[in-house]
Length: 128
Image (cartoon, rainbow, N blue to C red; front, top):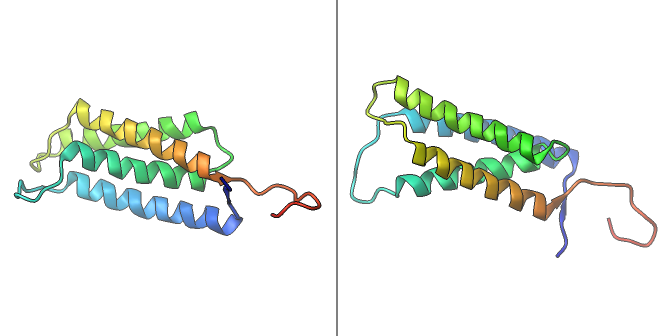
């Protein structure tokens, strides 16, 4: 399967999208939430959010260690849980939420690393 080469512009776009998405995710995570009938499962929402964050992180920082990126995302997930615990806005901190964050982040990082590649020097006779 061909892998997507990460040009500098794609890396920068992933970084900008990561910052925007992380800010939105943090804000939504600490805002008071309702228990409406059509609400998505909380753990699934955590996993999907951190899957997207993991994918953007993997694409935005291709030269960094995947383990270091995973720990950065774990720190961010922990920060969200601490903010939910600290603020009294109707949200609760849960270890299971952090677990869903870690699973989503790990899968997002793995898939991002699996489908992208850093651009290298082109060799004669091979497509770039």
